[in-house]
Length: 154
Image (cartoon, rainbow, N blue to C red; front, side):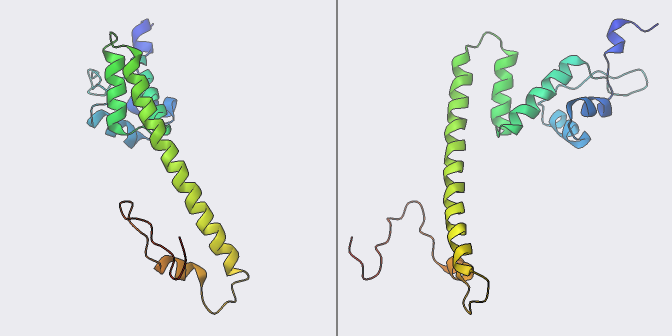
């Protein structure tokens, strides 16, 4: 009969299956240090445990929420150094939330432009293409001041 501890040991493929990760993703997170290297069996196989499974699930969920690898690393540092207050994690999340909101605003702007262009295209029989013309227009850089419309008042 196997002891309780060995029953919880997993090979990499099983760890990937249980967490829903790709096998290469598990390798990568181990390579970049987000997963600690597991001990090896006598035959040389990596032997992951429930702590690895829990940590990998944490990393995968953080990545699903859009946290960068460095942000995940910072969050894991907070997990590993349990004496850290929640304030640092909260600040990291607040910064990430601001980034997400900015991306949403950009996506809404893109949606509006594309919606307008698609409507202008109509049935696609126009001799000029509104999409092509829109893509040829110069896009001002974020630092540039907005251009005044030609011949318009502002």
